[in-house]
Amino acid sequence: MYGAIKEYLSKEIEQIKEEGLYKKERVITSPQGAEITIEGGKKVINFCANNYLGLSSHPEVIQAAKDTLDERGFGMSSVRFICGTQDIHKELEKKISDFYGMEDTILYAAAFDANGGVFEPLLSAEDAIISDSLNHASIIDGVRLCKAARYRYENGNMEDLEKQLIAANEKGARFKIIVTDGVFSMDGLVAPLDKICDLAEKYDAMVMIDECHATGFIGENGIGTLEEKNVLGRIDIITGTLGKALGGAMGGYTTAKKEIIEILRQRSRPYLFSNSLAPAIVGASIKVFEMLEKDDSLRTKVKENTRYFKKGIKDAGFDIIDGEAAIVPVMLYDAKLSQDMANRLLEEGIYVIGFFYPVVPKGKARIRVQLSAAHTKEHLDKAIAAFTKVGKELNII
Ligand SMILES: Cc1ncc(COP(=O)(O)O)c(C=O)c1O
Image (cartoon, rainbow, N blue to C red; front, side, top):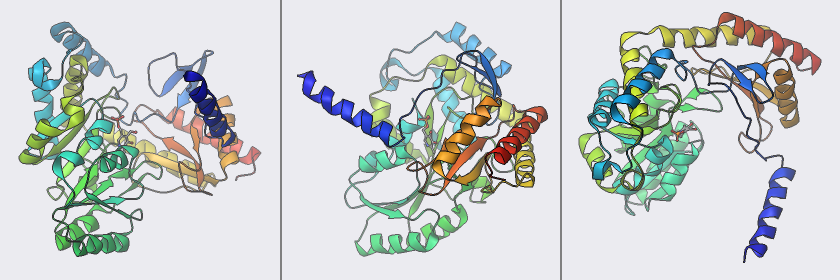
């Protein structure tokens, strides 16, 4: 009887709209890049993709995908352990392990699956997961799927983390794992991993980080937040995505000690019961890692672009959160203002998104600007000029 649930769902949809939380998909008719065309034909400069290294439409990455498509076919039509593993899947896993200096890696269809499928195979009711309050939804879901006791510490608050570790010890937890995003994507701030690792050592816990917004460009060699915070070799489990800086298509991974990955291959449900990554994505991702090994120009560029944009926007009088990532939250505090500003900026040819409660805390509405190595100085100057113009118009600066 669809009638009854139809009425219920329609009410729910109305409620989402009334709360101002209804998400509309903006349709793009061009490839992903620093400049995109949106439906209706308008060309805009894009500041809201996770295309940090500008690789989403990079010619070398596209060529590698085409070559692999020709050589290896379109799809695998199988999960990994039946007949869905080509040699290139193994090659990519080895590349990722070497990149981080970890022992082994397992690929997933998405980082959402990597986070969703990591806890349940490793931990059970006698164990404890201690999770940062701002961790990504996929970590929250992964934790929910596991029987381990859950502890949550206030974002980045090391006193609270210590309290939670003590609480887990008092309950007699067998194994403990602290889990945090490397970069918190709404603030662009890096987790205090050095302090987290110290506490982990003091209380005998493991550490897991989600590097989705960091791999390839944060830290001197682009290894990520573990390099930035000088904790290489002290992190037990890393999850990451191929769907952001590393080409932006899709795919995720977990990299860790050999036994951890071996158990995941045996028991991680999103790995066991979901199709293997398409060869073209695997081939192109191998190319991405080769490019990162050879050349640091893209990560230098995205860092320079971030510095340049931050300076311009601060000099214009805006208030920003000054983090280490290629994410610049321009703080407006008011939800409606953030929406009005984003709409006006789009009219000026600058595509950004306004974020407000419940995505960020109440009273902390903002426009999140994401920088890319694909942005030119001209793109950045245009954006700073448009922010200044609209900011004055809306009495923000
Ligand atoms: C911190 C974090 N973890 C995990 C994910 C999921 O990544 P994927 O798109 O590969 O599923 C995202 C994507 O939004 C993310 O930002």
